[in-house]
Amino acid sequence: MGNRLPRKLEQSMKIVGEQIRLARLRRNLSIAQVAERATCSPLTVNRIEKGTPTVSIGIYLRVLYALQLEDDILLLAKEDALGRTLQDLNLNHRKRASKKQ
Image (cartoon, rainbow, N blue to C red; front, side, top):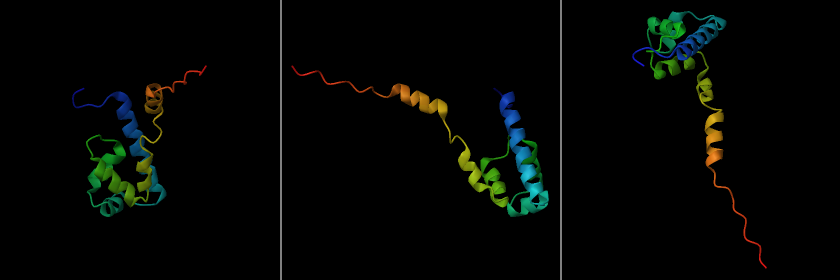
């Protein structure tokens, strides 16, 4: 894989960055204001908004907190359809008791 993310993940990072940027703009906050509230640099907030994959998850959480969106992180992997399907396939099927005669 190297240092680059797969294309699909890069696109997802850019979408998340854009969503964070739009949330900031809706609140009429500058990058500097969000950076101050999130105790990070404006450059870091800018990197988040551009979808740079090297920003740590902790910084993302602080920026989400600064935008009052911290609960959104709980939506990650919430609906695990594949995992639930695999779990259901591995469940032991109940065996019927033999009929008494």
